[in-house]
Image (cartoon, rainbow, N blue to C red; front, side, top):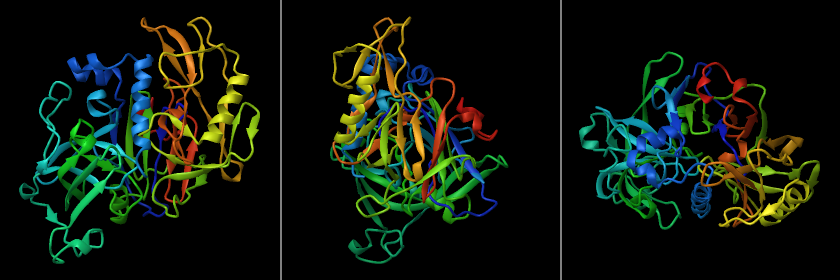
Amino acid sequence: MRLPLLLLTLLAAAAWAPAAAATLSTRMVHRLSDEARAAAGPHAARWPPHGSGGYYRALVRSDLQRQKRKHQLLSVSEAGGIFSPGNDFGWLYYTWVDVGTPNTSFMVALDTGSDLFWVPCDCIECAPLAGYRETLDRDLGIYKPAESTTSRHLPCSHELCSSGSGCSSPKQPCPYSTDYLQENTTSSGLLIEDVLHLNSRESHAPVKASVIIGCGRKQSGSYLDGIAPDGLLGLGMADISVPSFLARAGLVRNSFSMCFKEYSGRIFFGDQGVSTQQSTPFVPLYGKFQTYAVNVDKSCVGHKCFEGTNFEAIVDSGTSFTALPLNVYKAVTVEFDRQVNASRITQEDDSFEYCYSASPLEMPDVPTVTLNFAANKSFQVVNPTIVRKDGEGSIAGFCLAVQKSPEAIGIIGRECFNPGSHVSNFIFILKTSLHGTRGCRELPDWIPHCF
């Protein structure tokens, strides 16, 4: 769903893991943060001001593009961070990863909606990587398997080679082709097994994990237009994904988490959160457990709940705002409009339908919005609105930050869990269920970075 959320999202993939498994992490930064703007230099002049109409239009456009797609504690960097460099990179969150021996660094986009980890490699048609030096603190990389002493081609006979039927020989390098169904966006090439360099949060020691990497020789669509020019880290449920690979190797529990605090965050592999979290089971989508989907039994605005408004929703860290199926959207928005004590206004754009007047001196209380899951477990959206600002940066109004889903399936986006600028929330996902709780301060001491 797409209600404002600045989340500490703990996404996980399975329940089993060795007792002594570690957790790995990396730092993240929001694409429109002051830190990202400072790093972007002259490029940041094209970014819309925070809170402006252009700012939210950019996020909504990104969401609509994603809707077209079908759908020990370890980290990939010492600090565990992820970041967002802004409009130049398609409004996604990224992290730096090191691959191969000797290692090469790549700035990869994080995507819970896909499975494969691929990077530009022996390119036939890849995005241009020059010209980003003013934006980033290092150059973007191209993977050259022949120069890595730990790389080997995955043979067509391998169980994870889904294109094996099209191979002429079992020993032939396994080809891959992934269609992201977003403006004809694809990546294709060969599958390689090589080392991914990780860091242990417990021992602070480097960890080398063997994973499967897509040697992306040819990209198309958005991948040639600045989105994920240096690769993509798929975090989905499939066996080929990095979280699944790390768990099968016994390095971590089969889980991962992402924590978002306004403009920055972390990703941890092997994290299972805290015992106080509630949970709801994942459900099959189109008959298969292929993505992080949950059942929403009903939705409530204030004390008014709507029976017969159950729907399936995909939890998507790459989407900013929540999208509801049309019947649920109508019920929620009409009731919100009835309860809110503010005058409705018309905006210059149609990013959001229900917007209201406000001022720095008068910001009215808004009704609560709650999602009820199985076993009567509920999640109250911390702040279901976004604030609109005028040209001088002052509060000019607010909007109910929810959109219509083009399908009967909803999407729960990042902004749904936004509690404000000081405390982040989190949900985390096991292969069997989605867990969640409110407040970063409930987390163990090893995640102080979420504030």
